Length: 185
Image (tube, rainbow, N blue to C red; front, side):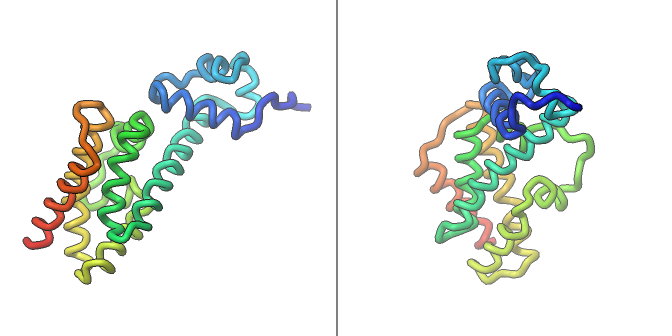
């Protein structure tokens, strides 16, 4: 009979997310997780087979957090801009989770055309928001999305790494200026 779990799976995942939020994925060790739970590392392994499994759940938890930001952005009157602002806010509010999801080196390098659908499960909904709000073709919407993602990702990266700070007004103005310029082109 397997040992009775001292902690629920969700408790362990939340503790792991807490560590990653504070110190990043490299800080997530069995010992650190045990300390976060005020326990030894042993109870973790009654629920999970190994730390790689815990890390997978942390990534899923980070994606769920990010998705909440995307949903908030999509509910804005100008959904595409809302998503861009929320992307940056995610980087500001959750810098280690942002770094985990969007600044971690990948094993394979996707083509630029394929990177957005690969890293963001809301890609198609975001793309559709551009098409719907601006009555443009899918090809033009994809080009706008790619250009603005590069720009927005740059701002978000600067914020997540604490290279600089932008006010809400500055973020809104920058995104609007670039979007209008690209739309006119």
